[in-house]
Length: 166
Image 1 (cartoon, rainbow, N blue to C red):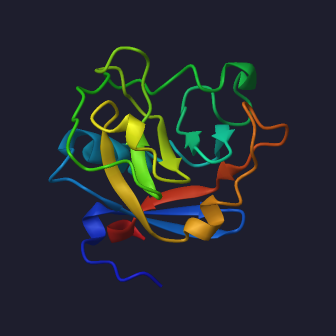
Image 2 (cartoon, rainbow, N blue to C red; image 1 turned 180 degrees about the horizontal axis):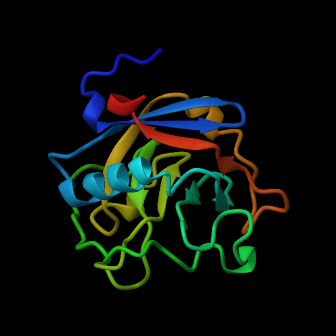
């Protein structure tokens, strides 16, 4: 088990292959961290698919509007949540392997619920996409997520919880 220093700012994601522990960075991107905790506590991320998974790049998920069974799966990746979009919180934290980035449209202030986990260092994204967390345990499970845009049989986040509530 990962050493959890701050349970209120740690996210536990259950995938088909095991548990992924993510340490949030509230000092760097407080708005994005608060949104992730809010959606996790509502159960909004439970059952949401990884709709865009690119080898040697990243795995994207978090479309709580279209990304789960029963929704219009053809639109997965085009939605967010019912909450307002977030203001960009760009920082000097690099997009290294295992970091969590906020997915968005061309508008820097359009991130909402979608996020991605970097499979490798993707420094070309630095200061263009908000980094707000990092995988501290279970990256080997992230590496096993089925690839595709979208994948034929997409993997999903079985459950997403704030460690303080688990």
